[in-house]
Length: 302
Ligand code: SF4
Image 1 (tube, rainbow, N blue to C red):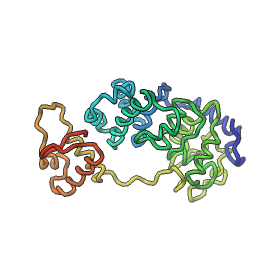
Image 2: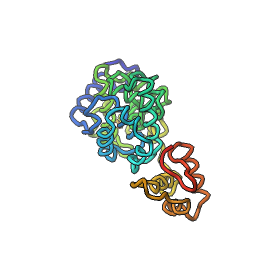
Image 3: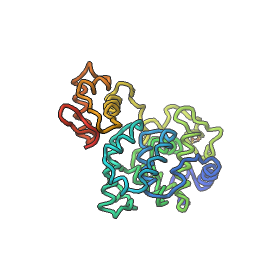
Image 4: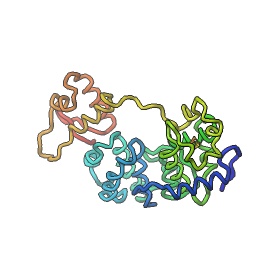
C-alpha cells in the first residue's frame, strides 16, 4: 500500500477493508471482463455521459462490430452516428471515430499507453486517459470522476481543489491492485456512499471517514468539491434535446430515399414553429462535424 499523508482517513487498514469489500461486492459489467485497451477506451467514452446500465448492450454490440480501431476508422462517420443514436452526446461518436483514425495513423493501430499520448486523442481528457491507464494497463494512478470526488471529500471531511483531489486519489491507490482499487471506489460510491443519503452504517470504511465520524454535518463537503458535478440542467426541450431530435430525424435506413427538406426536418424535430432555432442548431451540428448541408437538406456525418 502506498502511504497516505493524512492519517485521519484511509490508512492501510482502511484500504484493506475497502479492497475486501470491493472483492465481495463487485458489480458485473462486460468492460470489467477485459483489459483490451480499445474496449476499455470505447467503454469509457460511452460511460462519460451515459449511465452504465444503458451502456451495456451498446458496448457489446459496438466492440463486436468494430473490434479494433482500424475497423472503426474504415467506417463512414454517418454509420457510427447512426449506431450512436439513443446514447446521447453524439460528439463522442465523432471524436471516437477520429481517435480511431489517429490511433491507426500515429500509433500503428494500438491504443497508446501513456497519459500524454492518450490526451492527444480527441474526446480524451484527464479522466478518460487515466481510466485507460488503470483499467487496460493496470498502472498505479487514481481516477477521479464525480463519484470518486464525492468519496474523497467525505473521507477527508473537506472540499478539495482539482489538483489536491488528484494527488490524494493517486496516493491512495494500492500499487499492485490499481484495477481493483479504482473499481472498488466506483462500486462504493454507486451503491453505498450515495449522493443523497449515504449508507454509512453498511460502509466498510466508516471508521476512517472524517465526515461520517463527525456525524455528517451540513454542508456536505462533497458539494462543490473537485470532480463532483453540479445538478444537471433540465434536458427536455434544451438545445441538447433538439440536437438529438434533428439527428434522429436524419436517420434514413435506405440511402435511396429522398432526404427530408428543411421544413420537413424541422417538423420532425419539433421545431417547425421556431425555424431560427432549427437553423442555429443545424449550423452548430455542422460545425461539430455531425451533419453536412446538401442542397436544401442535410445528411448525417461530414
Ligand atoms: Fe460515504 Fe458514509 Fe462511507 Fe463516509 S462512511 S464513505 S460518508 S458511506
